[in-house]
Length: 148
Length: 148
Image 1 (tube, chains in turn red, orange):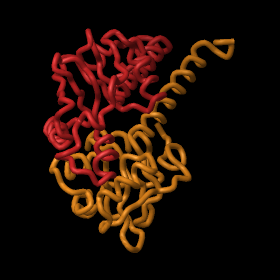
Image 2 (cartoon, one colour):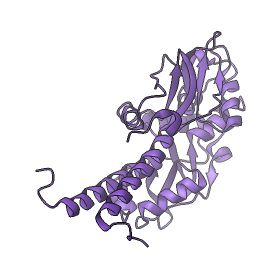
Image 3 (cartoon, rainbow over the protein chains, first blue to last red):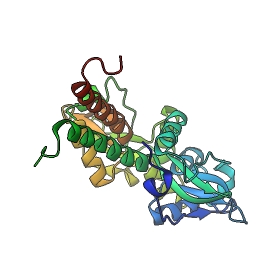
């Protein structure tokens, strides 16, 4: 698993972001529109300052019976989230997500989020890599004519 | 991938369920308490009649600015969800979840839900199976002394 986060796992992503002062309702609308389950929270200078997930909305708005037009993103987001760098390996990222039970991790460059990686993205890459390992090992065993 | 859903992917699970007449707030509380992101909806006879996820709560309660103490599970659940059987293969289940973009599937026996499988559970099993394939192929190539 020597794949790098960028470009092997994600590339050319448009990152959806919200502000701490946005309502959680507005954030949920943005997530619905973009069909994503986690959104980054950016400061005025565009820097990554937090992450908000469907889980946060379920636990801190719905389970509390709170009014999503009054609860703000800054009230329930996870501030200063762990991040990946573009050069991180897919394998290391997957270990981190497993050990900390994350489903999403922002990829940051100079404090700004350039992509969001899901555990699903990482599994897809890992599966392809393992299958390639198997194919290469089989080719070594059986030679070029295998499968011909 | 000849692993079966039960017992290879999940076993001895206690299934958390809610009723159609429960409020979405109560469902979110139950999901928070059990640390799960999807809950099954059971009828009076215990039969599986729906599924409710964190995504449903984010999209149909929070994004609408609705009152979770007034929106009922039956208003927003997915009724008659696709299900797995205990004998289904992990590989087939993973294909189904990928093609339909599911994260969770209930496992049903005689109309009752006996377990909930997440795409994460399936990836875990699949990864182990692929790694075992690689080990076996390497053992075949290099013989018993490999790694000794």
